[in-house]
Image 1 (cartoon, rainbow, N blue to C red):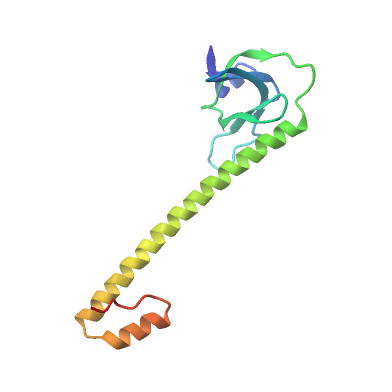
Image 2: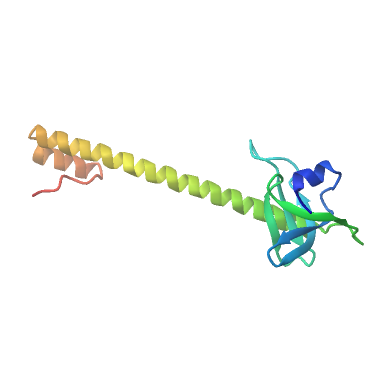
Length: 148
């Protein structure tokens, strides 16, 4: 039986519990780490960190990450490195998302600039501004008209 971490939390499972992440190769036990508070409008994040600390098994929003079965009693409390490892994954995911958004914004800005330059070239051609216009474009670090 698999359920979301949000459902597990509602049923009383707490951060630091040992849970099973259902993976293709079978369930993997790990420490359940829950983000203390959501960043911005985003949903709180969670992660299942392998008991030996060699990997984060699964990471994502509490409504999306699945765990299976009931928590397993642990002989010790969750080590501090488990939270640190999960936090690093959350930060990396956010940074990748921000980088992707910045790349998209840059691409859109470059396309807009190209449309403006193309319109300026058309205006210069239609109004016989040739050499003066090309000198202006070069002085502004923009491409001059293509000459035929």
